[in-house]
Length: 129
Image (cartoon, rainbow, N blue to C red; front, side, top):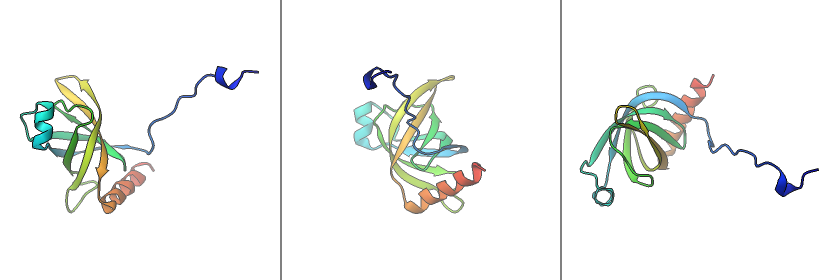
């Protein structure tokens, strides 16, 4: 019988909630303080939405955003937000290089309206069937 400290470690799934693929446009606004801290010239960054959960989203962009960057964003996706875009404040949690000088960016929502989170959950429920 193996002792507790000799047992193999179990893999822990860091994905807390389901996410689904979704297409849309995303626009990020970088504060002047963050711009100077990370050396960005652009104040606004546009990208493509790739997936979404109630806790955050994935996107692609041609601009590198360092992990930990705090941003304001606006998402337009007619499949989820029919009458107006989603507005949020978030933090870049991960970033990875893709082909063609594009970056895959994972953003965690820090501030989002509860109604918008409900719209995202409804969309996930519909897509998961």
